Image (cartoon, rainbow, N blue to C red; front, top):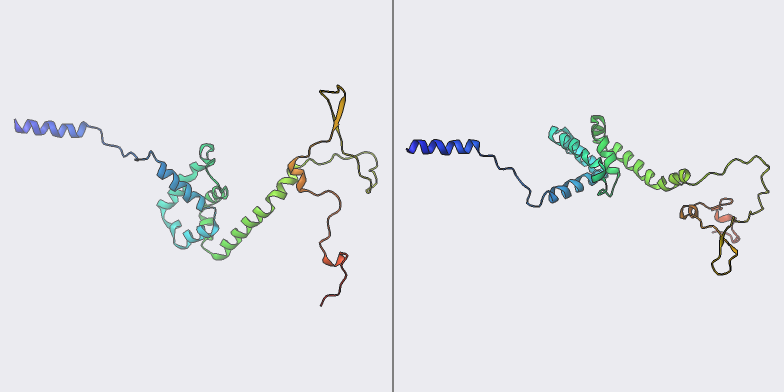
Length: 196
């Protein structure tokens, strides 16, 4: 009888389902760690550090970088504060980029390009957002004449007559000065004192 009881125990262990690991916090800690790591990829110096310490030679690490591409989906992208990290994650899928980032000159070039992107981003966007004037078929007015601002009329509630209201400018239009560019040469000012 003892042997049949042992057989029953061994059959129960093979037929019972294996326990699956469950995160105690439902994956919150893993989510935060992956979010922090992927945002570190927005820093070219950190990518250079990874390349110098040969992380990019480890196939498991390359697989982890491929796995992290799920952060490009809309349900995850909303948590990212540094969008350049997704661009660099995409570039890190390429072996030649990973090898190039081991060299300090490439790190500096990448950092400089990132800086220029940030520096000129607003102006480049304004060029595409602001409406461009339509080409005129008639002769343009003299350059010193200032056209009056267009007004719109709305019906006044108390008087019953239309009231002229000046147009409200978009906040984007305040960044672009109209007219001739300002001179930044200090010698062109009124103060003409001799310099030592």
